[in-house]
Image (cartoon, rainbow, N blue to C red; front, side, top):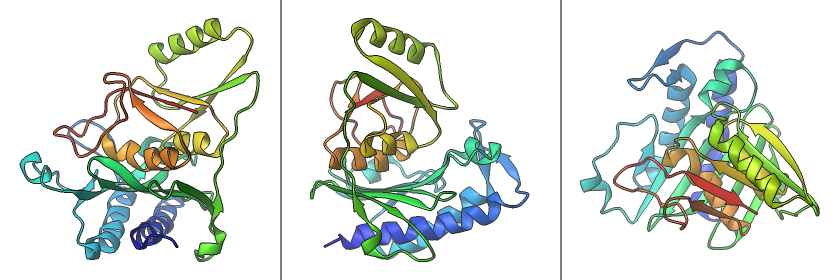
Length: 261
């Protein structure tokens, strides 16, 4: 049985993704937030659709595009939704197809459920961490549960596939890869560049082995991918605490982290 909240998140992500594609195939306006990060009409419309799906659950919502709620209120939440209605806005603007809809359910500061939808490809990843189950589906006209196929990541011998950010490749990542080559002379090191939370999906699906992140991310960037990785037995480790990333913190900014299969 699929958790009812997971079903809701799946439907929300697909509907939001369908709306995003309408904007993607048209001329859209780009605005900039106070931190100079871009935001589009697609971000805002997708967020509105997701809120409409999630609000009836009665579980509070933390979204990149919602007004942020003070931690004095949030600290009392046992559960909350964590949403990025359009992860990879830069990829969306640059028209390279590598953007996603991210929805996660957090319980006791840990990801419980996760959904990542890639609108251009019509590909959906989702997971239930307690059940230790993760799935992938190719969405056609409508979503059906029988579209879901289990994810079982596999390693390739004598090879390490490192995935990194398309928009945030930096010196620390380059040094990490150099050190990896020194520490694993017998293995071929391949680097893949991907935008948005697709990087988590590559690990969960077995198409990448390591994802190091040495640039800032927010909780809504990682929560859904974290859930999907956890459900396949892959940890998302903070490089500051050496523990798994946690959520609904006083600051919603993540520590740098490492995802490794």
